[in-house]
Image (cartoon, rainbow, N blue to C red):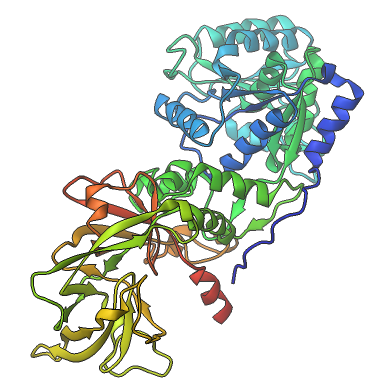
Length: 562
């Protein structure tokens, strides 16, 4: 079971902060701190990107620096302005703003000149080999590669061919530009990496100006250098790319940005790969990128997560040098802890077949207005008006005809308190021909009204309810974890076979009329059920609520039993 993390003492510096403080103390780059967040606009941002956003922007904020938002738009086939706009919206929603908005495509002219400079220095060549031949030439991690037969082309020939590539004289895949480094290097990325490939494709910003596009390894470090980025923070998979990053900078003799790697976020019961998330969207396992089961920032926002809860989560997991698997229960804890303090409490009966309770000694036609506190954790939250009448709805699970010991809800002859209202006693259970309980006849104790109880009767059970005459219909979507296995990457087979069939259960809800009159702008707690958020699908005629998180970590209990 996931336990509530202890409040951290004053946090020590992470290893990146230590590097930054050493650089400031030594006067490196004049003590200037400039970071960047460089997403590729080929999908929506997810919780792993949120960690990187918090790190890059947070580091700059802490040390009086700046952060650029730079779109790594070097692959026109997969990129789109839809993703650009969604990324900007997500960064702002998380509470950050950037110093400059740049695109790798801003630098296509400069990158092209950099490439020509390397050709002129004899450090790059045009290769006619196919992708399969280049892969074979590279050899294996334990065996050196073989040099391409085109590696010995002259500078003049390479410049001529590269310019013809740029001018569109060749078809896609016919030629590439490769760096001339070391085909025997133990680092496979050093074995003459591709710098440019031919793609006759329309670019979302540069249109049809270019038909050659730089590879990530060639564009990234030079873009950092052009912008004067002092600390280029990447996830660990780019550690083996760092020697190439530094080689290009050294050979071009440009500003030496420093690449530093940290562990990416791996979260239990979900996947973070954009490719896999795209499968879920395209194959309609989810309703879209903002489906509340998705680990995307837009999905978390639609589910009811707040920017502050995600920032708190990023702060709690910290920055590590090595990969680890973070329990999604910690993310749930962060939002649960926040909403416990801020979310108003309301009553909702979530049941396709609720039980009607008729309070036989309550006056017919009378409706009473009860004043119920909005949040016991926040005295400033005030009260709300809740109508109470002779007939109310309760959930079927709150009644048992033959209860076990220590069952403190309603049963024949038993007493229970209605939240914010009165103590009632079950006198009779009415059944239909199939033997199913359809109605309960109860009596109430007039002196037991909450807030002015003079009955002297103590009951152990309290249940929620809504007035039959005033209840408002709602659709309630009970979202849960997307996958049934803790670490899908460690399992064999298609990850989609582990999709949780209970990740979305839609039920009928009967809610307080206050939610109809004044729909919440944020989250609410459905008493005894969990925290819920109004979905964008909601209309004045049909309320729709998404469950953000349960009141307790039910998965931790299941795991413990297992």
